[in-house]
Length: 364
Image 1 (tube, helix red, strand yellow):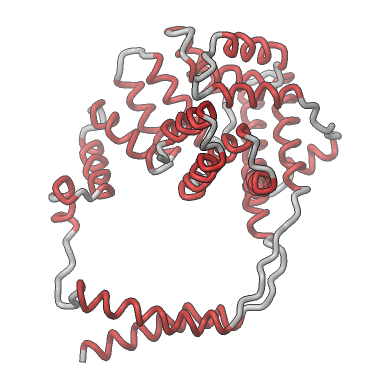
Image 2: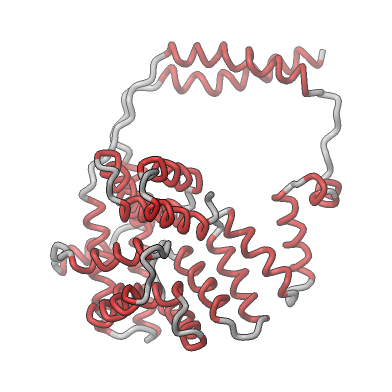
């Protein structure tokens, strides 16, 4: 009897998977995806206006940041939408045959419907010996819920969140590490970086203040110097940003993994972006949150297409890898990293830069 039930369940799952494919038609451009990308920029513009109201950013800096965000929004809006090709019933029928043909032998060899589920408590208890990474994270979270001042617990949890690219959670964990630790430049820089990653690559006023505190403790700390200069650039303080980048580059070894990213930011400053009129900025600010998120993703997809046509741009690969990480697309970030390593396999300096970024983002 039980095998009849499983057979019916399998048939139902295959039907759910196959019917949409059989009925599919050529689709319109992927407007939902574009709308999702643009949502990020709208949220950033809204946050900027809240900073202006709170008085945490000056009028000149706000205008420069608004112009920068709006320019990205409009540039991404110009990216062409993609269409999905039509699917054929043949592929659906092939899938219907392959799924049970592969699944059944595997299940008969390793599975058993009579085995009981593993209770959550047992799974958590044996997490260390079974290597259940997610269960280990839950155990630490449960411990910290009862012991919120255990700094060692937060130090364990923060890199675990980072490895999973859970940037908002990483920032919160690092905030607690900072709260419970003696002033430390490296910890502050890691906290600020997590805030930037959680904010889709924009250095907020709060994050900039964190990097300033890190530099007060260690004026030569590379991570803090980079994001401090980037914050100046995003705030529209071009002269100060250029001076900070120039000084940092002059003291950066030629084989430093962060050097290509530093050079890329300086090259970006030297390129003159198209002007944005006041009406265009207002239109960008009025877009929905979903539209703003779509802007970022459109930009990243456009960069990926350019690199497919010309893969010799190391700075472009570094930007693509970091952008995929910011979007929480760990698999795509790893794929871009592997592709770039293959492309630059005969360039030790490029490999060092790629490995440095991958190590920083925990995607190796």
